[in-house]
Image (tube, rainbow, N blue to C red):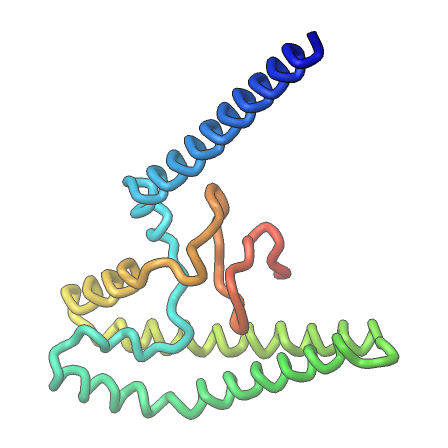
Length: 180
């Protein structure tokens, strides 16, 4: 009798294991289907801008690229300086995160400086983007937006059902957890 009960238990455990595996495989397949369906194009509609503004002229005709790159260069030093300040603030924050002894107050000040530097860089970048876009035709602006939409997900894409933005120094960060 014990052999029969042991065999039934083993068969039941095997059937439960197969059912669970099929359930999880179905869930993975469904998620893959959703990511490759029309929901994917909707998710791409809110993509963040690339980290620098050279993407604006990437798909233009070569002579138009040269013209617009000259205009980008006129304001480029201001943006580069803001970006350097942001990277320095990030390095200081990283240093303070691992400092021994740990100084929470100094880290809070450094993170505030990082936030300010990142906001200033983003402000300048958006200002320059608007200036360049104002000089492009409607067709050229459409091509710029198409470039953003075809970039594809980085770092494997966002988790299902969560809007994601990019941190200036790393992978995705859910908006619900982003510090304002």
